[in-house]
Length: 111
Length: 119
View (cartoon, rainbow over the protein chains, first blue to last red):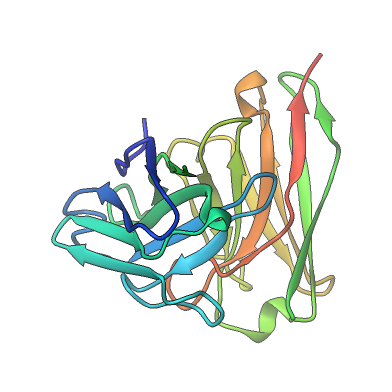
């Protein structure tokens, strides 16, 4: 059981917008920055978003993050076949002396 | 460009200790204000943070694993290590070493190494 809650799957056709939600609580999302990772099959995760809505250099602006109180979202605009991957939200949780937590992951399928 | 490389046995017997090291290339462990971490991913499942260490040895760890893990750093060898005691089949996973950013985001990952607990 993950501390952060994500839908197990999401899908869309090329060009569509897909949104992935991530629900937490006051001790994690409610108090800290949210990060998003993309994991392609067989590869290590890649940081997509940090500080709720900032993109590292090289990440297309089709990916955007947002946060509201104790939930966060990742939007993928103009969906492409290469976006088919697992996506994870993550943040710091202030409870139990502090620790990093993840969502269970969302599998995005491009139809 | 920073590179991280995990090393260690691919198979560990139940009840024994899993030991992994992460060598850091093109960057100094003690040359930056970052935490260095371990994460894992059981086959077909999601990511789990194990713990992280600062260059001075300070650590943060996952409460659910705290009683079984030790994370250390060797600045002279520019590497950090993980020891996970009393392993079981549930500890079978791809283990990643990583470097955190200014916050707790992770912009740098190793390629991962599969560790199977098997008798």
